[in-house]
Amino acid sequence: MLRAQGAAPVLRLPLPADAAPEAIAAAVRAWLQAEARRLFVLRLDHFAPRMGVRWTRLALTSARARWGSASSTGAIRLHWRLMHFRPEVVDYVVVHELAHLRHMDHSPRFWAVVASEVPDHVALRRELRTEGAPHS
Ligand SMILES: [Zn+2]
Image (tube, rainbow, N blue to C red; front, side, top):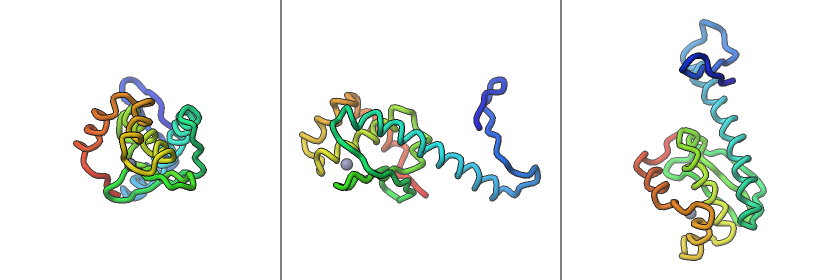
C-alpha cells in the first residue's frame, strides 16, 4: 500500500522488522510488478477500443533491450520497469504495441495510428531512449 505521510509517500509491505535487504528488494519488486500489471491493463483497456483493436493477453517482461512487443494473436508484452517512467511515456509504449495489432511494421501507416492517440510520440520516444535500454 502506498500512502502519503507528510511529504514523502511510504510503501508499507508485510515483512518482519528484521527482514534481509534481499527480502525487502524482492517484496518491493513484487509490489511494483503487481502495480505495473494493474496500470497496464487499465491503459490497454482505455486505448484498445479507441484504436479499434482487441488485445488478448498481457505478460510482464524483464527482457533486455525492448520495452514491449505485440503478437498478431493480440498478446502484449510490456516491461515492468516502465513503471519508473511518467504516465505519458507508459501510454506511448501501450499505444505503440496496440498499434502493431493494426500494422505489424513501423511503416508511415503504423506511425499515423500511434500519432492519432499520442501526438507527441516523437518526444516521448526520445525520453524513453535517453533513459537507456531496459535491464532485468
Ligand atoms: Zn514497434
